[in-house]
Length: 212
Image 1 (cartoon, rainbow, N blue to C red):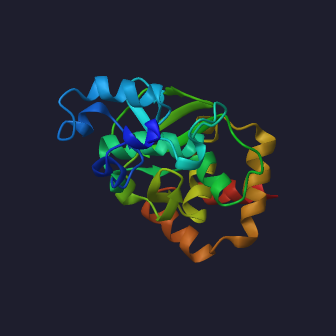
Image 2: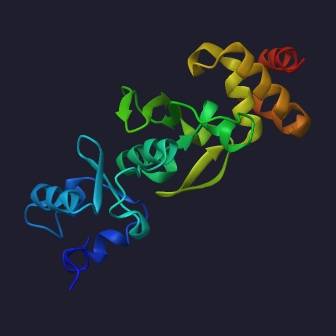
């Protein structure tokens, strides 16, 4: 019998909606989750992405030393497992890339979370957690490699990018290109509604300036 099949990740953990685990998530499965996670890590069934966080390796990626989970999906999964799926959302440049506004991969993933949280070093880059009340944001469903959650809509994303440009660590040229690419697709009524609700009416003029 294949060792990885015999000593695989328990079904109870595989059935979890987020394919990222903390040892404490397995207290009802293992008497010593840290020891068992270390064993599964050595077998290549779990990949440690940060201290205390492990991604379940997809079956077709087991044994591939070059594989790592996508940066944005990992940053989102860490937030979702700590705060709950409905309390976090992909935002900023990461949302802009999701909407096709930024063509290249970014070294920083941005996720909105309910509490202040330091940046987290991950394989392939960093996670930057932005304190936001996501219930006040305009969101749509998002599906990543490690689970399904929320991402800011196109209109919310553009409004966010233009509100505090320096927060997002984007070169001016990339910011202009992203807003310019979004402009023909924006629903003006929704954009204005969001700007009024979030007290960002003055940002509308900045969006037009960035798009020009």
